[in-house]
Length: 329
Image (cartoon, rainbow, N blue to C red; front, side, top):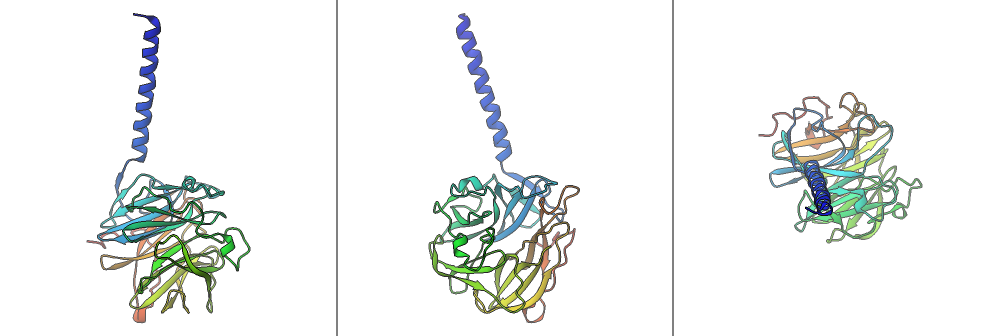
């Protein structure tokens, strides 16, 4: 046999073998994973933060940020994660659905807090960055794949007319009100709101500011609706607690009701999501509880039950290690 041909065949075989192994490794890395939660934190094989939950039929979808490793001294967040569950015990994790690099206009390289909402048969994922603005991605399925819907920011610091610091345009939350109007609320230091057009990728009208007595807003707004009332929960102070207020309309006026959740153990930040799932209400948040490398920059998502008292007042959430085991049948 010709030595040259033999060498070429050997080289080709090595190349194909390497490609196969690389592809297999990538498939393993990005394949669907199934796991069971035994309490809080619910995800223990990676660090997750800034949870945003969405109920779609019989499934709770959980979208999170991703702190890349334990024991960090600053934020390192390059992508987002998506999980689903039908009982809050058995979970599925899907391949990485969205990365900050998918937004070519971003200059920060930081995948900050985000939320996904369903409308018109599509899923819209509103993400924030560290200074480049708020973007929106779209997909046909909640697990993705997602793509940048408009190729530019939906909102930037120029829309944050009452702020001066560059990280003010963060933490978007979206709600469709009882009149079928979609709203986006966001901010750090100042809480902003705007209407969204029916296409969900354009602002409709001017940007407003939420303000009311005793409103000491840091970040992480979230709005949920129950029995004719809109509940605005948000991070306050630093280290952060979660406070809340109630209004008849998304844009207020709101009435302050007090602290809902105390300091999130071993984490300076506190970021919540509140949803009703199969007849019960849940408070989803992050802390720094994974031993030993958890902390303010290596956070973990937890779930505890949320309960209402007389006149719709929220009972203070008690963070627990047991979480919601056995609550969903």
